[in-house]
Image (cartoon, rainbow, N blue to C red; front, side, top):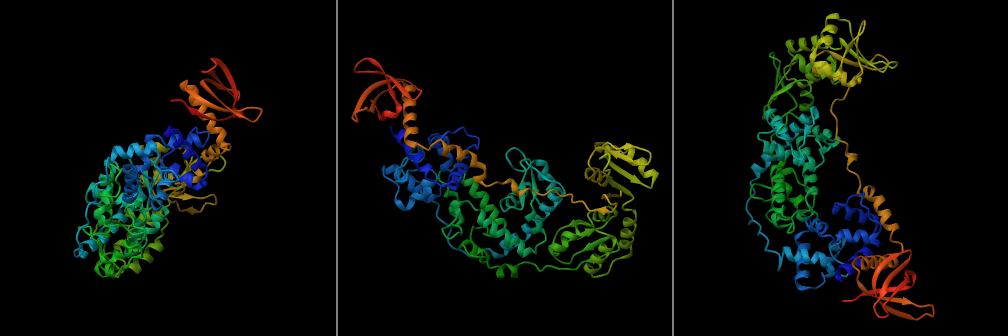
Length: 573
């Protein structure tokens, strides 16, 4: 029975693998860490299941798929030079023979051979200007997406993509022009580690927050390298570059979603200026495509120069005469609302934006110092007045945690303000209760503080010593959530290995159990006390207590044979 010998061959192969290799295999096959496998034979049985095999075939490169299809079509082993990745994915034996269950699925998918691959586009001059513009505009748009995600996480739907509400939020905020662009940029950010998922939402990672303060060219470089490294294995070359993008649609022969996946990655590379509209590689990404470093000198010449100064005007606006350096843009947007995004952006100050900046840790002195250094025209008197008045009012409402009662206390010297907060319906979620001279809540002080801030009260958080403390509102993605497969599967691997210490005995008992379940007729080879061997033809009827029971077909009697004396069995056709 080929399936039975395949199962044993795979079990032996699994036993010889390192824990890291087993963990990687289980992760690729989407094995549940809580699988009830008892030994490597159980593992082999599950890995040879058609559904599991289908998952293993999906990521095969075209070269790997061609070697497998050819071996099945010719009923020959896979050539030695092509075996390693297929053995690693438990699709062929160590000697190159394709497992029978794998061969069945392969022959059903490709009865003869793989279809011819799409020919690459002929060489043509790259549309460098358009690709460079894409690199600049998408880097700026991605920064806007991350900044908006710092303000409020981006919700995900069941499929993992953005919800319609979140797409509309990004479009309405001017971060992207279309919902499709929102999906594209979030996909780029997630693939390179700038966004992380909690399962129900996207959050900015620590790396994403650092990325926001990089110069535009460094933003492009780090993301370009990460995009190259995140490419599916089937699109990569042996030198760690990438194959012509025209061939990506054919690179995953067993994956029905291969063309769609290729289109997604082509869109990402095109958006980031790594390939042009024709799929060709522009000069600055040629090094990446070859597996080397990028050469951004050509791209630098095509990008608009960044500025580090703005014009502050009496109408409480700021005009940047060119693309503002990212680290300055991020800080300026912490104290002003950006009204337009172009090579010359405009920003508007207000009491609310200045108050938000102070809430985030700025002071009147730090605001003046930054704006004075940033401005080409000095700080106008109207803006000075807004800063002075807002900083004077800020902190009139104090939020602290009472160490004795563990309640949150909200105090102010303004009785009218205290009464307004008591009856404010927008604060119902924090359930403020009036005492003699304060408001109290069972909700945590940080939550109460942000509720008051959102309701536009001049609140300040106070620590145990009575000093103001700065609160970080943005919740970052926990990158530790993506655990090592070895950690995930360590208990399962330990259990599987423990159950397979005596592989021959375990395999014999497994074969006998299957024979009993099928009431099969088998030839049982038994070692007798005198050292000789005798074969009994039995109809297997029971197994337990270390013994096999069955009806002897020749003598027509019931026999009970100790498993320790059985050398092997052979099914009778």
